[in-house]
Length: 77
Image (cartoon, rainbow, N blue to C red; front, top):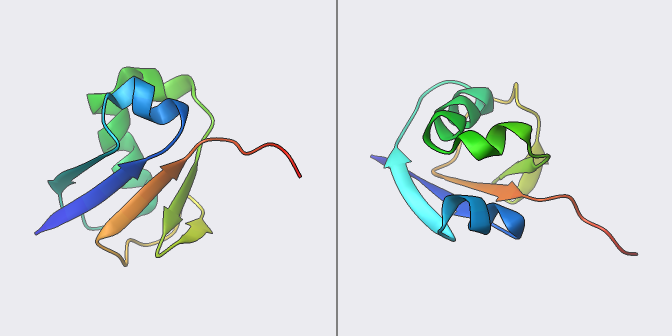
């Protein structure tokens, strides 16, 4: 199985894509982040949130979805 990763905003510039599929990892969201930072080292110093099932989750959340979104900081009101 595959895990679909979607990128938004400046994160698309770092990864050079808006979405991709990676091997489905079991575990926590932090495991996906670790995998992606290894693949895209410039992500390490960037501030972003992770959404799973369209809900922002912590790095400690258990993976329960086949789709994850990386969201850059939001501004405005």
